[in-house]
Each structure stands twice: as structure tokens, then as C-alpha cells.
Length: 69
Image (cartoon, rainbow, N blue to C red; front, side, top):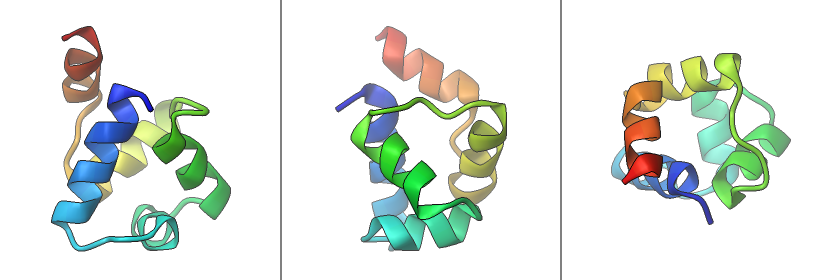
């Protein structure tokens, strides 16, 4: 699992989202997109990063910083 996935899952759990479906609904993305991001299969693109920031407050700068650490 990637650092982006770890950060996303931590933020989602802190907001009470326990399933990928919960996360997808909150972010307004497809289940498949949320699944790919949470498993580390794909990294979110610009629209996905914007959805993550709106839903969980994780900025792309925060995510990149965590990956670099």
C-alpha cells in the first residue's frame, strides 16, 4: 500500500468512513476510483486530488510530503 493510500484511509476513518463505498460517496467519485486509490493500484489525478481535499482536507502538498518522507 502506498503512503497516499495510508493517508487517505486514515483521514477517511477519522471522518467515520469505514468502507470504500462510504469514501466514494463522500468524495463524489466512483467506487472503482476510490478502491484503486485506497489499495495503491492507482494514484489520483488532479480531479481525484481535488475530491480528496474537499472530502477529507488532505491537500496534494500534504500527500506529496508524506510520500517523500
